[in-house]
Image (cartoon, rainbow, N blue to C red; front, side):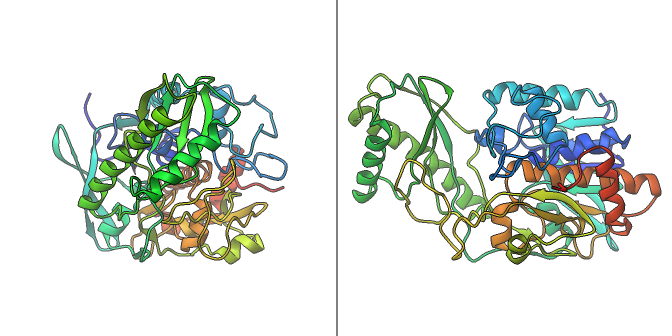
Length: 427
C-alpha cells in the first residue's frame, strides 16, 4: 500500500487523544495519517494496561460529560447503551484490553481517508517560517519525510511542539511513573488486601522496594485475577537513559511484590504472574505554553470559555514521589496543597490546544497548555479523547476553509463539535 506523504492531517501518537483525533479528522473527509510507536493504538489503556475511562462522567451523579468518539468506544465495548445519560461509575472500565485493541483496529481501518502506520516513531521536524514543513518518521522504511498541511501532536510529551520550537515547560520534579500488572489464580479472602498491603509496607521498610502505591488491587478482569496499580518509579521520562532505567525498575518491583505475596499471603500460594504493561505509564513531562494556559483557578471556579471544546471533571490528582498506604481506597493525590479537590466540571478552551509561534500545529492530550496542577486533572483518558476530537475536527475544518489552525475561530470549532454531539458539557 502506497503511503501518502502529503496528507491534509498528520496525527503523531495513537493514544487516547491521537486515535480519536485521527478518527475525527478522517470522518470530516480529511486525508489523514496516524503514526504510532507501538504495534497497536490505545495509549495508556493498551500500552500500560489502565482500563479506566477517567473523566467520561461527573463524580457526583455519573452524568456523562463527553459524548463523542470516546463514548462510542464504551458503547461498542458494551459498557453502556446508546442514549444513556449516565454510566455506572465516573471512571467506567473496559473488561478486555485485547478486545479494545481490535475495536480500535476495526474503527481506524473502516475510514477510507485514514492511513495508520504502527511501529513508527516521530523522530524530528523541520520548519519554514511559522509552519512545520516536514515531520520525520523512523520505521522499517527508514527515515520517511511527511509534509502535512496540519500536524496534531498527541505524543504526550509534546515532542513535535518542542522540536518545532513552540514554547513548552517542564517541572523540576515529575510525578512518578507507574507500571500496571496482573496476577492470576488468586483466591479472594476477607483480609487479602490488608495482608498484601502489610507485606508491601514491610518490604519498603526493609529496602526491598524503593517506592510503592497502595497497593491498588481489584478483581477487574476475572474473579480469580488481580489487577494492580502499585508501582511508583521516580524518573525523568524525557531522558532516554532514565526512562530505560524506570522500565527495568518497574518490572523488577512488580515481580518483587508478586514473589513476596506468593510466599507470605494466603490466597496467592498458587498464583502466577500474567503480564505487565508493554510500557511504563507516564503522567507528565513537557506541557505546551500555548495561546491560553488552563489553571487550577479556572478549574476551581469552573470558568466558562466561549471557545470551549472539551470538558474536564477529574479531580486535581498529583501523585507524590514517595510511598503512600492506608485504607483500601487509597487516594493517589498528595502534592500541591489541594489534594483531591473535586470539581463538578470545567471547560477546556481551544486556545489551550494551540502553540505559540507554529501556525499549523495543534496539541491534544496531557501535554496541552495547562499549569502543572491543572494538568493533573485534564491529563486523564476520556478528557484526552475529548481534546483529541476537538483537535481532529479543527484540523479538518482548517483544510475546508483553507486557513491555519491558528486562524480558526474556536467558537466555530465548538459549534462543529456540538453538531456531532461531541462538544463541551452544558449541564
